[in-house]
Length: 68
Image (tube, rainbow, N blue to C red; front, side):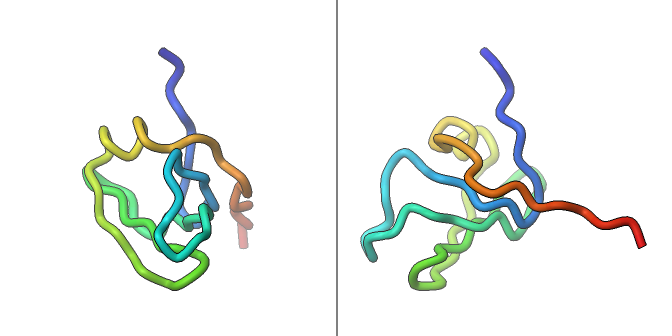
């Protein structure tokens, strides 16, 4: 199985949409658990990394890091 690559501040699409009607989530915390924030209503959810990688469909917008 290919490892899905995602990073902090990336916008991802999950397999199931949020009850508010949108399917865009922003990754706001990385670690053993991943915190994602709904782009539609602002609700945030903390889920285990293993469950997140299983439920994530694809990365919609990759956050570009700037070296300053």
